[in-house]
Length: 420
Image 1 (spheres, rainbow, N blue to C red):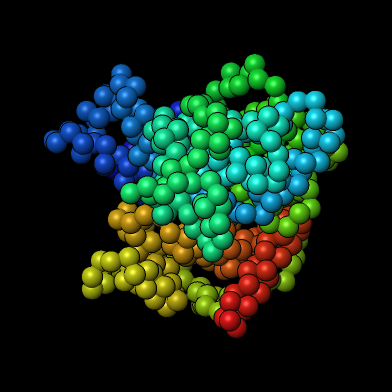
Image 2 (cartoon, rainbow, N blue to C red):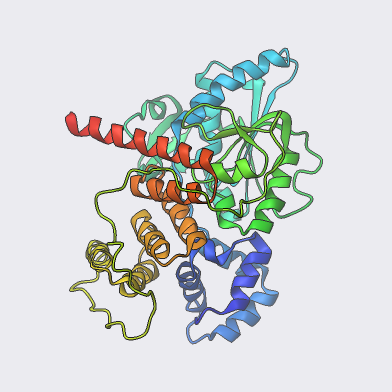
């Protein structure tokens, strides 16, 4: 595709996607899929089709958006929601039902998890309602069907499945009692008229979305989220988005692993720091690219990439690690891009890209890659450690400490698991 900018601009305009947040390889892969759907079609012919076909426009968006979700992802968020919901009902003297919003709601796992969590906490069906919105009609359609396979159920604690699902031949069907609590519809956060006639929500879940926008779009979306969230409400975000919310004037409610923020009494938004203070000490992972001598990334004269025997994902990952740890930065980066062109996104690949960018002095690019790694694997210890170091170097001491604490908890959990 040769980085065809017109397609990147189209996705930016339609859904706010910043190509640098996901990398060109993922978008180009989706474009190749859509172009080849009609044999012999060229990129120019596909572009012309895209101009007048709303159906094809949506098909490209669907190809770019790869839902990665499951029930009760980040379980502490739902436990926190249940406690706050009981408290909120008391504050409003049970005079109305709580309003909760999930966007993007993807294929429904998050809004249905919200409903299950509140029902299990003892709330009656009349005491809350959940709205779920997503830019993808296909995802919303799947959410309404409420049938799920094993990939939607992860982790050791699956007792909720016995309470709220009926086993079927090819998976599980969500109970009607839970489905009735959730209203699902198509919606775009970049639409200025989104939910404009709706009352604000007591709780809003918008997780792992802001990291895919550039800074102006992040600010635009944040203003929409503030409009949708009640003055006394709580906004739940993704684990990689906490420092961003802090800079935009929100404050953490102080419950570990909940990723919950409020705006009540929050300080004014702070500009990004221009001075670079001394970084906080950060625990280093076992294996890193040797810091010295530092090769010049992308300099001329690099040796050609040696294609590993076999092309399976495990072999490619091992090749990336071998190249990076031997100081072959340009070859390692090319191997990462090769992996992303031929396989589904993986946290470890984005971690290596972050580390390679870090080594090259590209702090902003490295930060983006580390955040993508944490989106796919929230407790990726090495990504947590390196992102913490970057935030510290940029003056975000609070954000760095939060990430260091998460890394420490992750290490303790791993040690506990090994001792079993």
